[in-house]
Every structure is written in structure tokens, then in C-alpha cells.
Length: 452
Ligand SMILES: Nc1nc2c(ncn2[C@@H]2O[C@H](COP(=O)(O)OP(=O)(O)OP(=O)(O)O)[C@@H](O)[C@H]2O)c(=O)[nH]1
Ligand SMILES: [Mg+2]
Image 1 (cartoon, rainbow, N blue to C red):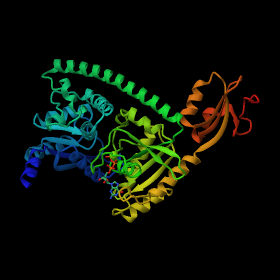
Image 2 (cartoon, rainbow, N blue to C red; image 1 turned 135 degrees about the vertical axis):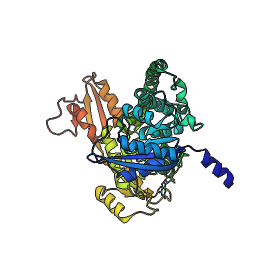
Image 3 (cartoon, protein in one colour; image 1 turned 120 degrees about the vertical axis):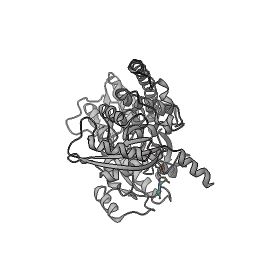
Image 4 (cartoon, helix red, strand yellow; image 1 turned 60 degrees about the vertical axis):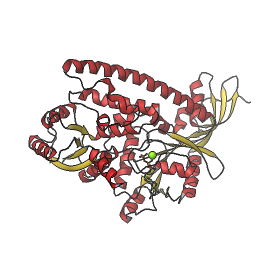
């Protein structure tokens, strides 16, 4: 029905994009590639992109970011092309936001990349946990940017679904300064409430993880750039009915399923939110409850879409985000996905040079999955060291940590302490160094065990 298709397109809001390049602060992506990504983000949010402008600067303008001449040009273009929104690829400070809104006038809404991503998150959050986290991130982002002109993209666009999509209901479009003050107080109260709720979810998840760890089942987490194929890989390995889509940030909430490794051992595999360049770490950290699933994993599978022209930059952005979140000490296997697609030989060669140990697969056609499972098994096994400890009775938390991070083989309660044998991940050995009975480097076994 072409008629219906045309009318939906007409109903879509029209977005004009602005790319800013600061000469001495080169990003991971070229401004052009970053702009292409912003266009995909805008489309994912349900907008139609009608044009763009770029600005190259030595340093950002304190008032309008792009300078008054460029702002005038932008205003003209926006009026000419009847844009409903202007979206900047760079983060706008609260001051930039205020000044630019004043110049652009009431009929045009102004967003930056972060606000756009938050809107997509709000549309895609499907669980109450996801919705809570998105709402908190949105409010924290908006609080310093609260202005009279502010309106919510999803609400304007006529829906935006989900509980988080409805957070505009706190009365952000106040008529004047007094109303703004009321709104600010209300939002601060809501932020405190959300933090408390998220803390409850986090504690619940932590308890659940401890229980899971007690069974000794290792956890493998899928990480990677958005749209890399993480959910497709989870489905290929477990037949889980997860949502897969050729759009950015299709997955927001973690899903965990069990897999069987070639030696019969079971492992749990978790799919979660993807990463993207230029996303402020503070914002990623708002997904704390979700991200803890990754930080507590025994192994990360870093999924890379090797058909993407920016595959190397995307992989680098993921590594950087993992570093910022202090998760780079968890061992990881790089998985080059989509090898059934058109892979540029140079991109593949570059990726292989950086990640020589990578495994090549196609999650779609199930190519290379057996090799991947063997790699998961050997990585999990090689990372564990056999240990025997004598923990003093006072070191209850170390015993819990052993249960949580390692595999406990036996526990014996003796007069002098608790004798535990099992396996620990190598990166955690130093936490227990004082109490080694076996497998400790000479001289480190400070407590001599009582004969059993
Ligand atoms: N050709 C090809 N396409 C794939 C492959 N794996 C995934 N895709 C496609 O890539 C797109 C994204 O897949 P998802 O599994 O949703 O990606 P994701 O990493 O979970 O993405 P987000 O949840 O949005 O971060 C979908 O259109 C998939 O069909 C593959 O091996 N080959
Ligand atoms: Mg996904």
C-alpha cells in the first residue's frame, strides 16, 4: 500500500543534523562517519533526516559551540527546509543548549547525540529495570538543561512507547521561571527515588548472581558495538527468543541463557546493551545494574561486525568503554561476526592484526560456532588456577568471594579455620595470597594447615 507508506513518511518529524569537528581533538571516527552514524540513530528514533551542515573549528565557541555566523546559516537552512528538530553530533553544554534554542526559536527542538540515544533507549526499554535506568539517565541529563522550550521528543513524535518514554509527565514545560524551579525540585525528588529503586534491583541481581555462582556455572557475557550481532549470536547458541533488528540499540535489558560446552560443561551466556562511540561514560554507568552482569562475568565475548566500514573504530570504542568502566581486566575473546557478508579485505586484515586470536563466525548462518564454543571452553579453563586455602574463621567475606568468583570443590571446617579447595580465576589470586596452602609461590603460604 504505497499510499500508507507515504503518509507515515509525511507524519515523521524532520531532522536536520549538525556535525562539529574540533581540529585539535580528533575523535575515533572521522566527522563524516560519525555523522552517518548519527543519521542511523535519528532514523532508529523514527525521524526522517532532511539535511546536514558541518563546521570545522579550532576551538568550540563558548556560547553557541559553532559560532554566530554558522548559527545564522543553520537557522536559514532550518527555516527553508521546515525542520522540526536540529540534532548536534557533539554534546551540547547547558549553555550551548540555551543560546542555540533562543536563536532557533520556539518551533524547532534542539537535541544532541546523547539526548537522541536516550530517547531510543526510552523507546526500547522493555522491562521495569530498563525503564528505571533510562529514566534516571534522562533526568540526570536534563536537569541542568531545563529550559522553557524543552519538550520531549518521543511524546511529540506521538508515542515512543514504554514506561521510560512517558517520563515527560513530570511537567517539564513550565510556563515560567517559578514553574521551572518547581520542576527542578520535583525532578530531584524523582531522581532520589529512582536511585533507591535501582539500588534495590541491583542488590537483588547481586544476590541472584551469588546463588548462580554457588552452582559453579561460569558466566560468559556478550559485549560489543550496537548492531554487531550479539543477540543473533545468543539466539544461534541457545535458540533463545530474543529481539533482533537491524537498528541501533535493539537490546537494552540483559537476557541470560545456558549453553553446553564441547566437554559437557554448562555455561551461562548473557546478552546486554551495546556500546557506541561518544556516549558519555556517566551515561553508560547509569546502566550500572545491567553492566554489573558484565563486570562479574568470567569471560567476555567481544562481538565485532566485520562487514562495517568502521569495524576497527567500533572495536576500539568498545575497548575504550570497557576500560572506562574498569572492566578491561576480565579476559575476553574477540569474535569477528558476519563473515557471510561482504567483508572488506583491508578491514579484516586490520582486525586480525589487532586481534590475532580472534574467532571468525557468522551468527546468521551458524558458521564457526563449534570453534567458538571450543575457544570459550579453553579460555574458561585456562583462566582458572587450582588452589587450596586455609581461611581464618573471621574471613567470611573471602569465602563468599571464592564462591562468587571461583569454583569450590570442597569446604572443611577445622579448628584453625576453613579449608577450601577449588579453582580461582588468575586475576583474583592476589586477593587470597595470604592464605594459600597449595599452589602458592614459595614463601606465600603464611598459615600452616592443621593436618586433617
Ligand atoms: N549478514 C549477517 N548479518 C548478521 C549476522 N549477525 C547479525 N546480523 C544482523 O545484524 C543486525 C543486528 O543484529 P543484532 O543481533 O540485533 O545485533 P546486536 O549486537 O544485538 O545489536 P543491539 O542490541 O542493537 O546492540 C540484524 O539485522 C541481524 O540480522 C551475521 O552473522 N551475518
Ligand atoms: Mg541486541
